[in-house]
Length: 529
Image (cartoon, rainbow, N blue to C red; front, side, top):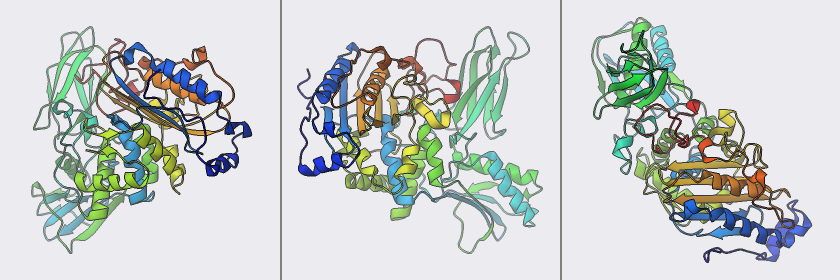
């Protein structure tokens, strides 16, 4: 048994006794033995897996009613949390911006120039820029004799996190952050474009390439040919928007590619819309700030934050986390920067039980981020008292629920177990890092919170161990032991079935087409898994 594990087997005070008695938890819960002791034994057995021999695992299981730790292993040590960082970012954003917060994108005019001004809306599609252009045309504008000026000054011009890996740069999960951006689909992967390749007419012939949205902003260099297998690399070059395609293609394949300059990309979509609606812009597209006194011609507002949380958290969208971080900084201190936004998140974390942490971004893409299992558990308990908690709770992925916007990154995990439909939790993945933290209701109806952070594993992903712990918690009773080796603890909990969390790729960052090689599904788009 690990010496750092501490099991709480008595309640701390009469106040806690009163709390549990009034919570609907059965009266025998006042005596935690033997169920708590059995739970600790079973989790120890699960964590005895050989894949964790060289790794570090931190685990805490806590009663959300009493605050009692039912299990704790290295709960106060810092771990890289990967996308568990989004638990903090999303909650801080709701507290700071409000569930009704909407991002606005405006078109304004002054003098001879036309201005496109953004505030970071990650949900802007090509169709939305076209709709803005239609409103400009409807206002009577036919010719803009000056320039189209893209105003992205709501945020600063630092586009990438300082700790992000350079080889992640071309991929959608590490797209550049700008106050003017565009997404290719309703997953709202802001700052990216979908490049689709399909076989040509016969073997050896060039492949067919299309983009979503249709755009000539991205330059395609097609060196791929039709072949007997799909082994293709779709990669944007550093420093520009040239996408080079190499390899062979036997079946259709899509790659989500981050553009080099999301501001000019968004402006190009808007300018294309203007032309389609009969508005001619004579001058070039440039960057600049909208002057005071400019006349508003058209406005588009995003869905409210309470609604945006669903694709953000269910699909673990990194760009939403970073945009919200800068938006918090802009609101609180007038600076749309990472430093200003992270200061807001840190203050929120401290006020909600997170005493030790390291934050370098909002998504967890940085390996310099650090959280403790105890801090995450304290946050999860504290958030239950927030007026917006029901909205936030519903945004968490739900184990075993097949709908992408319900189950999210947990939709393929824990199916056919007591955890299915019960566990609401946030996943996290980086190479050598996995995390699962959230809520589960015990077999006796007691609400529990848990956090499982694992760093430094070298073998296959141990996400199945997270699943086994979560299932065991769903079966937990304070009076009745449960056999951790029971078959239903392992139902559909294989790590190869895990749905992708999107912090950074696990061994598939080459952009090659998916292979049947037993790799975890991480870092391929959810639709491909």
